[in-house]
Amino acid sequence: MKYGDDFVDEQYSDILEPNLYTDNVMIPDVTYNAQYEGDVHSGLVHIYKEKKSGRKDPKTPASDFEDEKTENDLIDLRLNNTYQKSKKIYQVTANSCSYDKAEVNLSNCVNENKEDRQASALACLINEGTKVTVEAKTITEKVIEIRKSIRKKHAYPDIVFASVDAFAQMLKEAGNKYTPTTNDMIITSGRVGVYLGMTWFEVDAFEGTAKYYDFSGALKEINLDDVELVVYDHSTLHLADNLSMMRLKDSEHFTGVKAQNEINTGFRVTNKDKVAYTTSIPS
Image (cartoon, rainbow, N blue to C red; front, side):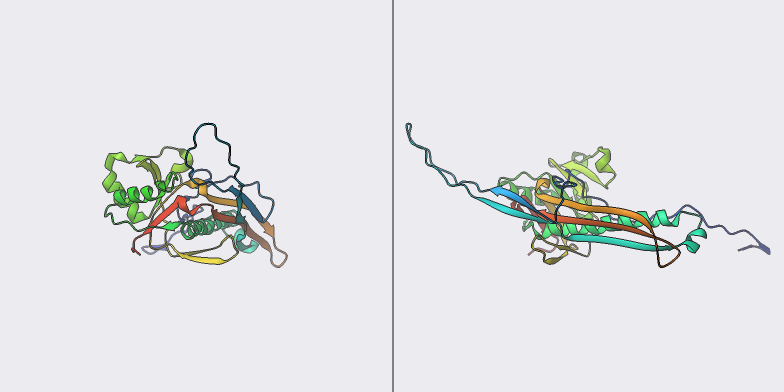
């Protein structure tokens, strides 16, 4: 580097430019049911569901009981999605950098796995939810119509996932009726607020395709590009991990360490009637 005819010092900054990651919208007990999180010690969880009787007509007084035989179902939550990242850090390279290369890459491994895990969770939500078509033109009207379809099935939606375009349109329509969220745990996860009695999340992860292994063990590939709105009851989306590990491991093959992270997760929507979504391209 020269200033005029003089050579001047060059310097490498020890302040790193951060990578960009999608917003974290998978928040325990806010956007998904964390009931089994951290308590799973197997690869498959069976969730019981007792069957509901149909509506019965009233009887006249002094009538006998009529016994009904009980029935139940099993809903499988299979922990069959593994996310792994391993980055090689040669000691000679680490010694020649002004920052802690191993720690930075370990952090990258964790964030990259979280991003992949979240994409799979969104794929599960779409694949195991219910697609609806509404004729409304505005985002507000669409969400009201989607909510109505869920309420007619006796569910209570509390979360709206909106694409970046849909969220921007909602802000224009809602004006001061939209209330930004001040909860620290949620607000650090992106643009979040309350409108129409539900919590809204701007989901910049609705892009490309995402894969996950479903409860039957089948690999599903879901297009997220066209997802516009997802309205749902968070209690029906289950995420559970039975492994979450990160480490810096000395390598036996080269002088240096490996930054590694691994997560093993299961995804399941236990009731598709509690999830409804629309796409920007009508059916």
